[in-house]
Length: 262
Image 1: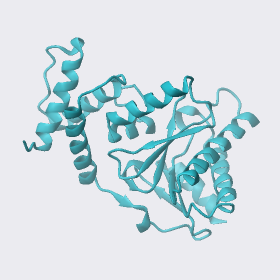
Image 2 (image 1 turned 90 degrees about the vertical axis):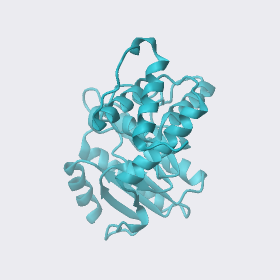
Image 3 (image 1 turned 45 degrees about the horizontal axis):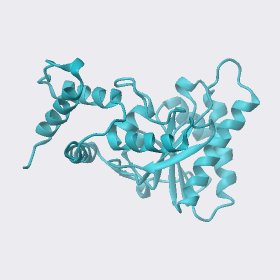
């Protein structure tokens, strides 16, 4: 049976509501934006429990159409910085980029952000990729048997995102004064992502601003570590052809612009 986007959205919401007795009697709002917000929240808080293939199939159809409608940007259409044709600086939503891999700033549990509608990159990536991503991350962590160490990374399929893979890395959290260990671990995060990309023969990778924002790593120092680590690695690899530094805030765009000018 063919379903409209509205019908798919309502089906997904109702399924998730029916899963939990606490939501019994909850009515689906009529407003489209409120429905989108509710669906995202329900996906965010859902534990990585088994789920029906029917739900996942309809979810995938819904998310792919939502993402396509929102616009997909092929990195081949982006211009490199003048100082290095292997590096691109781009401001916008990382989940819209068509590349081999995008990098997610994850927490040590590696299963996404459980805070409803939180605006962190971890939440946004998991929301747009869909529930399959949390299930995959959970399986990986169950097999590992311990939380992901800071500075390390894991790779998963991207599911409904336009990229092929998501590389999840745990960056350092700066509590108090920035020290050399924070810097070493941030460098390790970038290097671990590049190593995984090379191991899987990926030719392009998109980095977010790892450990800045709520992780409290100073933006300027984090950018310097990112640029230096990436440039040093690119000089040693023949596999990775393009690295995109994705920024969202104007302050980060200005910082990276200055660093990449020379």
